[in-house]
Image (tube, rainbow, N blue to C red; front, side, top):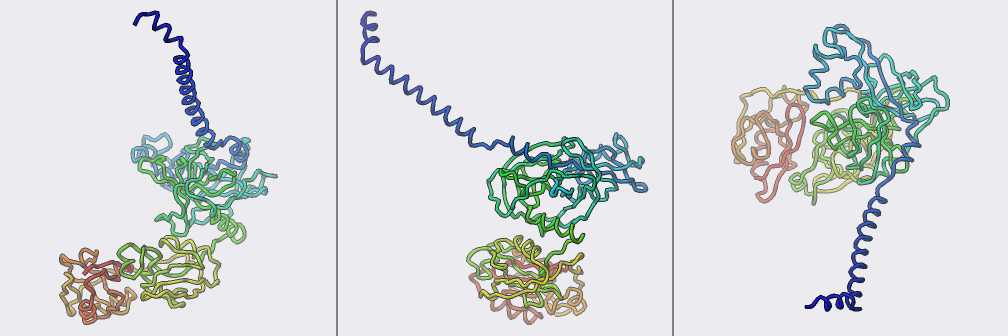
Length: 491
């Protein structure tokens, strides 16, 4: 085409319209991108005002502990022994060794540690973790206006890892606003203020990852799990929601490296304030006690007990002289509700019982023999020291019985039954390949129940095994090293 014709086409009305439409389309795409980016930015929370409003009530806590005779001193370290143990082994060896600038085993130096806390009353009450101040001879609280005030220890509760301090020299101190942890939702934004590794007033943010977490170290605290960056030195500091209310106390981290790995745990403020009030008013903490050993209900156990889905807390053992025994609770019962609250996981039950006032009657909905029933239990006080006597089964040449389950059992000696606190049962002598081995039954276990039928002797064992159904799983109650557990066997 001649060049004059091309120029004429470019100046034609149709071409100009197409060109204008293309420009409008490009502008529309660009506006959509910019708008979406702006909307995304606007959807993220701004913590600046919240931090400004609340940081004055957050404190840094430093402690000094006099050296013990021959113990290793760790002087000047911005975290204590428990926090040191969270560091990689290389750093632990460095800080504790002869080459450590903080004092080796031969240097009996005062031990210094550091943590966080927050003021809950204008007259100077401060909440923090027990492990921050444990064993301290001197406690100094530093505010963000750089004042350093001595504090005394009012009381501690190692079960919840909480401590209450009192600043006696302060006047009209700033305080945090206390929220309600029971209103927290998984996925909502939270933020923390603390002193990780001694860096004062560090702010980190994230979301609530899970609620009601039970940790091996403490069954009576339904921890809040977050992905807020928490490190040694953050311990005892507050966890805030977007209303600026304290909803938890940062307490523990899960780590394999010694640092933050996206999993941290906080004590719910509802539980923390209950502990605070008891320590402030009485100096001690009382918790409700049911007196049972419980275990999780998995899919196979649910099937064997007649539940449509796994839920509840399975009672493996009822302690002698406990409120549960007085109320008639039995091993094999599954607690489905506690005072109207659903018990979905076994870990849900201990905090519910723990927060119940001593002497109050709680209503338990249980499953027993395939039927639901409700019983009342007068809650007692959790003993300071508890546990079950452990005793290894001794050999006995009583009658033996080989069963089609791959299981050989012997009669239970009277002295072993007494030491374990069981009435009847049989001792597992050998486990061959078969359903019993698959279920996890091991030699020296004491079997007291199969398929909800009591097993008091070898003859009982034979009769119960002979009548087992072929088409479903059955539960087996065994006592192992002094502890009762339920296993599931599929004949």
